[in-house]
Structures are given as structure tokens and as C-alpha cells.
Length: 578
Image: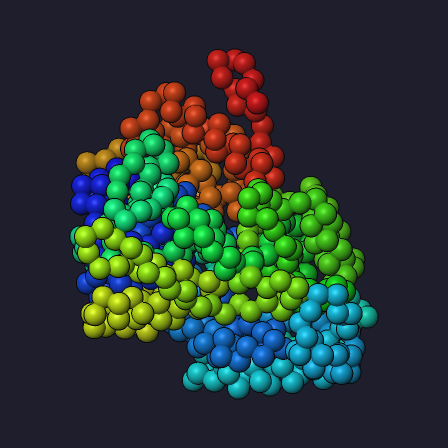
């Protein structure tokens, strides 16, 4: 799946039954579902795949216990069902996650909860949720979670037992409630697996990143390559707008203005703080801050993820994690773990995204529905019957498979085509035949360790699932150069990076740093590493020295500005370049 080949495949045959605009997880999952039905389908994304809202998640696959208070029982049921399913069909990236809620009162919130349920208005005075209310919620959640023991049921503990298990918790707590949801270790890689499944369905499925929908008239959608500026018309019977919080902006560009969206910004920071990491005991700490926002402290990849906020955002403005939000995160850490010291020197990465929520006027952001709906409009077309524009409003990571199946079913009806395959229970990418036991894991690692060693095979299995076999074959191919660890990040190797660049539609150097690997997320990026990666990727993608320098500068700019990464200047010809 090279960038040039994917671009050419679309521009050489500029028509399809379905054109999907926006390659976040919901657009990609819809692409996969339609491709598996044999539908002629194309998906385009103006930036990199899964680089928008889907790249700014809390890295959780969860049933949405707090949605119970909103009365969104259908969504909770669907979310729990999908969580349980993803634990089985994507076990390489979705893992059970023990989650603990610190509780500081017994009866608080019992009378206020019905008022919150009925009004959901901004300005409503916050009242903390006490043990009684949380216990009721846990019981309902357990009822939704019944699925042959996929995850254990909840457990309540009093103060003494709670502090014995997690001694650095705030000693002012009265109880803890512990239940299980799921962690999503590599959201971007999971989305790429979903995309690859769709592409593997056959040549009728085509995908291209860095292609935007720049306009539309009765002669089709105007697509533009955002790297070269090349434009061409594309014809489709059904156009599907899955551009998330940008849905209204995309519809405006298509000449179909809408006011469907009202997304809120959520930010996170990633901390390298061994004391805080140890304090979590390997659990997600999920709790209510004093302003009523549900927030989390979450161990992941040897770091601690802290988030999130829920702020109104103007989509015409940059999406950034701000200094006041960081202060907010430090306040919440101090509330839960008062003796653990956290400051800005511990931040290795920060990120922000806008949730694709529906327009909500004066409804409080925390109460805006996380459910989804599909809006439909006719599209006039020259010389033939009208087409259809579908806009997805809402949606979240946990329910991507079910959402895609529902949206695809609507599309199949428009095309008068039957559903021939269900994605329910269908393994995703490297989750296919993923070893489910320690014995099976040992067998896989042993079988694939002859050429790269058992430790390396185990690392690649954890990183790519069973698709690691393709990476290993590439690394061991005698026709290629001898492999070697990267000098500035030996957990990765040259041939591994070459494999990603040549097969995963890498266009920009920053694609490797942010979405093909987790180097940036864990704080492993340095200026020398960026320069080394550029040297590895350049021959694969045909970059000359000038393009390589441009990519280094662009990657550094994005990491510094959007993610707060501290990087030393680039040394060029003995002169330091900022």
C-alpha cells in the first residue's frame, strides 16, 4: 500500500459506487465493511489516516459507565457488547483493563442525579457522586456486561482494604469501586489493521491519504492531492462524510452546508513519572474531579496517561493542549495521589482532539450524547438519477465496528445490494490467530524466532500482532540490506522502518513518528532520531536531500507545536538551525 500506487489507482479510475471522505476509525471501519461486501468503494483523507479525532482518544475501549446517568442505555449495551467483542477479535491491541474509582462520600449525589438526568443544562451545580449512586451504576453496568465472563464483575472495598491495595491513594477516601473495561494500546495501528483488511478484500477497495474533497457539483466531487495540488473529478453513487468534528466544514466545501456538529475538545498529557506509574498499581484510576468531569490516570507503555478535558471548541482554530489544561491535570493528580509529585518536567507528550459530538446548544458538554446518527441528503447529478450524501454525526472508538455495520447496511440499501458478510466476530488484522495462551505465545515466538531471535519476535508480535510474520519475512529477506537496530532508538530496526514506509502509505516523516510507531507517544523522539529516520525512509520514498530536510523541519515543527515535545536544534553544516 504505497502512497503513489494508491493515488494512481484512484485517479486512473475516478469513479466508484461509494466515496468515503474522512479516514478516522469510523470511516475506515465503514470502508472495511463495504469492501468485504464486494462494493466498489474508495476512502480519502486530507491528512494521514487516523490523524484527526481518532488519534486523540483516551486509549480506552469502554462500555461508558457514566452514560448510564444520561439515560443512554442503548449506547451502553452496544458499547459493552463491542468491548467484549474487541477483546476477542483484536486481542493484539485491546486488553482487559482493571479500573478503580476512588469514592469520598456515601450518599452524596443520590438526590441530584435525577435532576442531572432530567436537565443536562450547563450551570447546574455539581454534586459529587457517592458510593450508593456508584454502586447502583456498577450493578446496572454488570447486568449489561454479561458475556460468558469476558471481564470480571465489579468489587467494592472499604477504606482500609482500598489503601492496602493502593497505598498512595488519597487517605480521605471512604471506598473504592473496581471493575473492568479495556485498554487500547495502539489506536492508530488498530485503525491501520482495519484499513488493511478492507484493502485486502480486492482491487475494488481503494484508499488514499493526503487527498481532500475540495468541492462538488453535478459532475462529481473535486478531489485534490494535498501534497502535489493535483485535482481530478470523482464520481460516486453515494458520498459518505465521516470527517468527524469537521463534518460541517466538509459539507460546506461540498456545497451542502450543515450545522450538525458541536464537538468538545479533550486533551491529555503523557508523563514519565515512575512514582506515579507505581502508584496506579497497573490500574486505570477513573474518578470524578471537583468540577464533575470524569477524568483518568492510566498506565500505558511504561508511562502514565492523564486526561481529559471537555471544552467547547471553534473548529476553525488550532486544537492544542493548553497550559491551563495542564494545571488542571496536575490538580487532579494531586487530588487522587496527594504525595506524588508531578510537574511539567515529567511531560513527554501532549495531545488534544475534538470529539465528533452533535450540536448541543446549552446542554452541558459532559451530558452531550456520545451516540451517533446518520443524516441523508440527495445529490443532484448530471445526466442520471440523484445520488446520496450521508453524513455521520457522532460515534466513538468503542462502537466503530457496530457503527460501520449500521452505516454500511444503509448504504447497501441505497445501492440495492445484499449484505453477504457480517463483521461481527471477524478477527481484525494481526488479531487473526493471535496466541491466546502462554503456551501458544511460546510456540509462535519460537516458530518465528529463527531469523530474528525469540526476544525480537516477541516484541514484534506485541507490536503488530500476527502480522509481525510479514515484518519478519521482510527483515530477513536476503535481497535487502542487512538489518540493524536504529542507533538512536534500538527498539526499532532499519528494516522494520523500511517495511512500514514501503507498505503502509507513509507520506510524511511525521507519519512514522506519530502513527506507524509509538516513538513520540512514549517520549522517545530526539532530533538525532528524526534525522536518522529521515535517512532510512528517504530511499524508500524517493526523497532527495531537499525533501529530506523539509520533512525533518515539518516533523520537528509538529512535534514541538502540537505535542509539546522538547527537541534540540538541528545541526546542519556546523550551523545550528532551529
